Image (tube, rainbow, N blue to C red; front, side, top):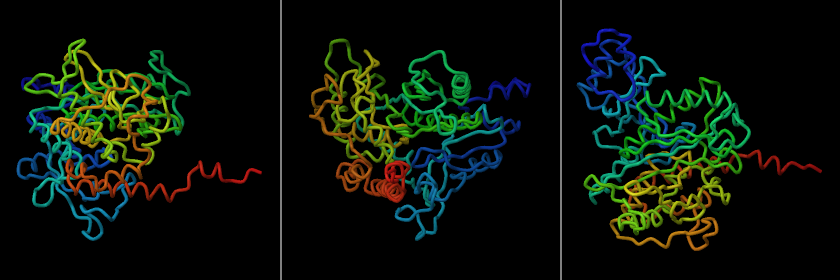
Length: 456
């Protein structure tokens, strides 16, 4: 902000989105910002943390490495935040100790819909200051560093789907795919969202209604991978906040209703020396870098399914043919039935990875994808022939994992997963998957009651 402005209301109106540490300090001293949410992305991709007094935050960032502490169980729990055993990071045998939170000041931002409040992403560290390797943000950084060692940078554009509901029913009862004349409830919600996201430093590329009742798709512009994931966590929090303010519910379930799937598609390209490494002229063969990346994805992703499909519900999205969710580990040119789709033109040619569902943590889904790509580049792998027809009739390619039990069986102890992620990371996320499986195995579902009650 320009220092010559003296009108406090003018200054406050300009506080939006990502701000520098200097502008943040000035806003705190004017008391335009009074509270800071210090946030750790958890295993589900949710922002967890504390609300600090803004002056306390300033003081700690000036004098200390960590700005706060949090119980380690927020990185070793389930969706219900139950204290659990079985994790190496923490548990009853360790007394559920604290972890430090180190603020990444480049992520400081103001949310216009929450006046007086700022948000900052943090990284988790052990008491001795070493990074927590199983933390999602750290896991993504590790893969980005591996990619950098090969001379590449990843740029990512996320494409997110969710279903907007009134109670447990979609706000509209029918298909509104690509519709522009929307019912007032949905139209108003999207207008609020389109205003709020850019003001939170989360620019959007496009908004559209999708094929399932109440389903919405938001696409985001390309950017550096870590920043894209940070922005996504703010987006998801904003969606849920605005929905609650309108007495609505936004669900990011992978399969919120039978036959309905919501995805989190990763549009990904590699860059080398400031130029797009996937650039393809019309009629040309794909660059070798892109072919090796495709081969690595198809080879590696089957081993890492718990990172991009973490819940039993995740696999119900894959269950229906011709649902636009992949059933086979295949790839194709502009084919939305494939697990990996080559799309875009010229310098914009890139990969769309269609495996992750809406319930995926973007840091972890991208971690899995980059681990596969690094594998393909390092080993100079060759992809199979592209799918040139109905991707759901492709019996030559391996099947996408059918359920979480199968996925974790291939993940836990996988040589590839251990080599790419480290044994501690594999064990941690295998335990998390087993926790989800155990919970679902003990629950009696509505389907069981419906089919089990004697109707004679």
